[in-house]
Image 1 (cartoon, rainbow, N blue to C red):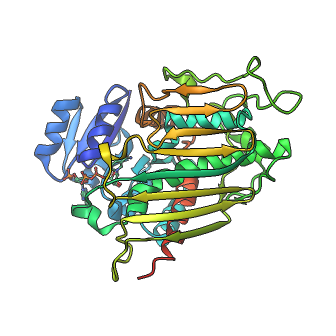
Image 2 (cartoon, rainbow, N blue to C red; image 1 turned 90 degrees about the vertical axis):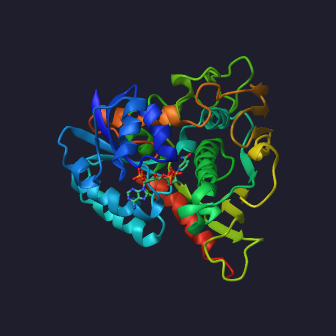
Image 3 (cartoon, rainbow, N blue to C red; image 1 turned 135 degrees about the vertical axis):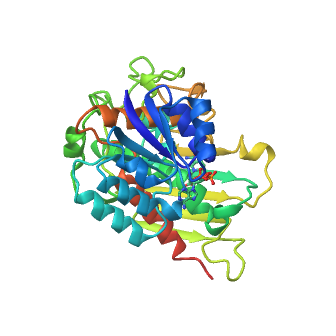
Length: 389
Ligand SMILES: NC(=O)c1ccc[n+]([C@@H]2O[C@H](COP(=O)([O-])OP(=O)(O)OC[C@H]3O[C@@H](n4cnc5c(N)ncnc54)[C@H](OP(=O)(O)O)[C@@H]3O)[C@@H](O)[C@H]2O)c1
């Protein structure tokens, strides 16, 4: 078992502790020793410490999980990379373009380093199912995504200084961008949408697929006629979860950034700046439009559960409960209602396993990596350029 240090014994630190405990020997690091000790007793662990420097100095600690507020992520990530530790840092990876560059520089000086961003939405079973349907051509060429999550959420303490889009909406930016990557890569060989977004790496799709370690064999996408039938559906998604619900069930498509981004912040008060609580973001990739409506200032029943989002293709559509509780597919080959997230609705389990595998398998890189975080953050930062005040 690898030894992992958990920095920050707060709300999400507790979630990480629970998920990491079966896979690792844990050392808890909190500025309050009693808090770290409380975590050690509750989740089991081999040690506690109060100073991050002490955690990084522990040779047996192979990796650290950083579960602190965003304003301290950059310094903590860079320190950990310099100490030779694998890192999983909470989302948002950081809070400015300058910080993205700083982390990027630290990472490129260490090509072997592991830097993962704890963007659990990349690992949701509902996303894996939807990507598989799209890859298999189950709804035809994807043309539009409309994603909505409107809730009443307080932003107290350090959260008050952050916008809802950066702190919460970024989950849905990641989800939409990942769906767009899959849709555009799948559309290109079918002669649908031209499959062109703005490539963030410049690596051709096929090469990127071939080079990805741990991606497994590319999923079969289409039949000889260019699309499948119900009988020959290669969908292997198992609603019960497990490996079949892996985030990388098929090939890993090229990363693309939207070519157009427009945003409005309908409830922002004069002088509000980045502390917005309500964002409408329009995204456009070639041949594919996306719209995200995300708010923390709208009354909602059951904390926004049972709101719906939709992915429209030219021969079908996927409607999903915005958290991924259920997914309804109307298309060829597979139809009907699925509850894909029974065991790991939010993807924390799969995300933790990816990090553990990165520690165990030399050369393996995480799916939720620096490049994806950089792409997702750049969408948020560009949207924020349209803040009126
Ligand atoms: N993926 C998700 O679903 C999800 C959900 C919630 C939050 N998050 C993200 O996780 C991060 C933390 O959020 P949270 O809700 O867990 O916050 P939180 O409950 O306030 O916990 C953060 C912890 O970080 C530690 N901390 C605070 N300032 C620090 C500093 N300057 N240096 C070192 N440690 C410091 C504190 O722990 P000690 O007092 O023990 O030192 C605090 O308990 C944020 O980036 C947030 O966006 C992600």
